[in-house]
Length: 59
Image (cartoon, rainbow, N blue to C red; front, side, top):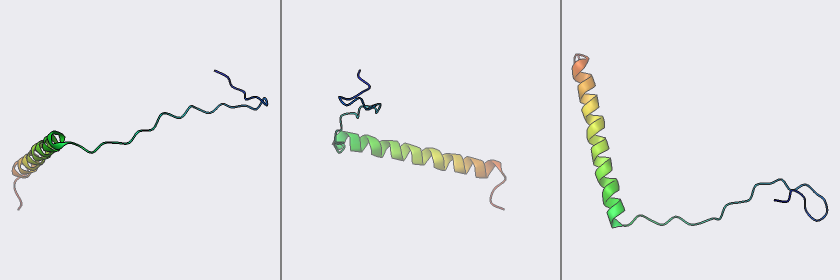
């Protein structure tokens, strides 16, 4: 890997990676994201209810 150019100047920059564009999720991926969101919401809600009930309620 050469560190100098033709004129003897230092060229110590990293090579840039090849760029690509992201593709939008298909229907199956969208459904999976929705299922994960529902499970996450149920988990967080359950933990909040558990924390409130263990701490003695909202009094």
